[in-house]
Length: 237
Image 1: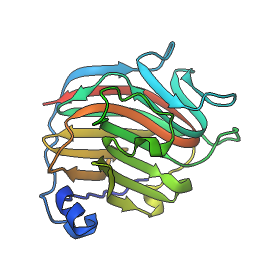
Image 2: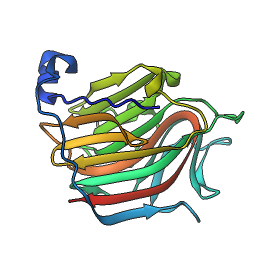
Image 3: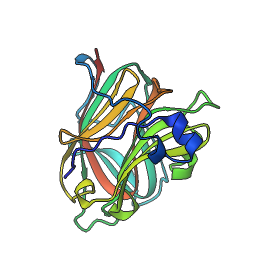
Image 4: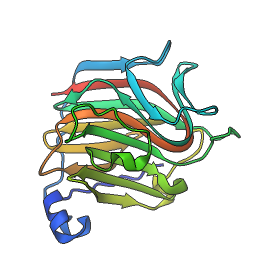
């Protein structure tokens, strides 16, 4: 699915120049990603869903729960499922994720999305939102949306100071979604860099001159049915 693609951009220059393309050579590429250290969190989603905060519209037909040994997100609008403990430092977040399309009410091949290192600069309590995408505009965080806009775009953004800076984008079908496929996702934060890999192949990488080093991790989507399994979070050393 995913071709190797790396974007290494200077955020400050991107803001000053009006876009990331003119800052593509602003910082050296990220090449060091450490080694797995202590296991900080693990979940195979058997049993009741605990240790998460789900932000979505609660109504008949929408569900976020543990089902059949997976985290199920089945919604007709925006939803974020936050791990309810803050993370900090050098980290590796890994999990398996699938967009289900087989005739369900909310089935739609779109929005395989992620938030990480998220903080609200105006409120120590992050969990105050409805699940609407615009509710998150004023947070500080990294965001990747794979197969957004009904599976036409894959985008990497950094949120901060009320801005959502587009760092890189893929439009090629090779970087979009296939239905009912299990993808292995890895998100790394290490020494001022952050990276996403899918099925072992780099999707995005960014050396941040103002790195986000602490915050919350969340699964994000809009109007779809998705399942998640085998979540692990390790320190990187």
